[in-house]
Image 1: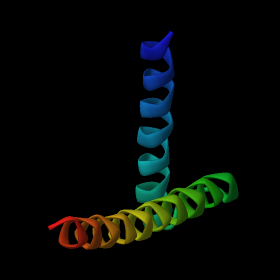
Image 2: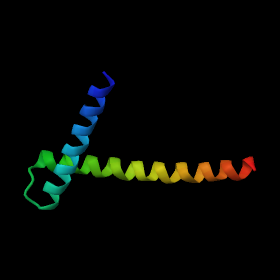
Image 3: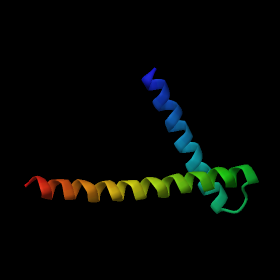
Image 4: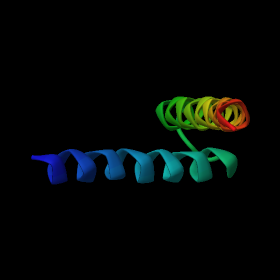
Length: 65
């Protein structure tokens, strides 16, 4: 079951990346542009969360010493 969930997640990520490339070329239909916008937004949100997580782990390490 876990493998199936990972495969579906991988298919969604790959599909989102394809839509981003397609939309950047300017020939994508509206639904693909929407999927590309959602994919870019999710990527930016993930980057922000990763940056904030790095900062909090550094502060924990320095306070543990």
